Length: 313
Image (cartoon, rainbow, N blue to C red; front, side, top):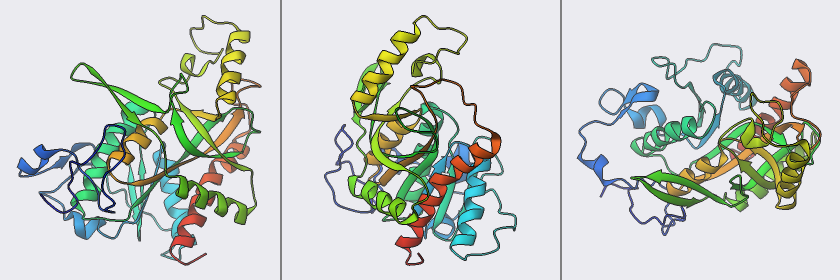
């Protein structure tokens, strides 16, 4: 087997190996002459992966292409790796599915919205890191969310992702059968990120469970979708039950993100800002400027973490 390739994986996502290399649990890949990462417009037959990405140590992913480009520009200036005002090329310019930017050891990738979109991206990202012979990689999702019992603008570092029944698991149907995988995230990494927030002292940050749903409206107990067959009282009872179960925010990507990073042997975290308190309403009514400030908070926190890891803080 090639270095970093292992089949020693449990379905709960926990690795039996302490190796810091990337794990691919797919023997079929070794039989392929070329691996085409279709949604990135990259391939092992057309690109030199180790030369392009071999130095990557941090991967930051988020839903919006423009947000990930802005993050790349921001961290370029913070790390002193170039002119943050200069144009940064999109490595995936040949496709409109995802956007990818790189500066030094930091790779930024958009993942779209929802579990299907981020799962496709993660399959190809993990293969990209493997083909690039990367090791000791930390992957962090930075994004937005709805808070539960938190004031808008608070940042949540996810301890574990839970489903809509508050179970720490990701369930997927494969070959007609339900496969359940664990969604626990790296506790040490979460604590390191919390320490960074305490050093910044610019916004409230908490560690808590994140509920990952399949939908923005009914799946998150909103009252403002095209369809709603429950009462406001039932909605509030459900959200209060989520809070009592340790849930502090809701989004739509963390469960599969945690499960796949565990399977790939990647140290991972989810850092999301809350745009509203769902116990007080459903619609996001803050001004554009306020929302821009909120969305920059996870970026500031993760950037500070990366600078510390590189000895530049």
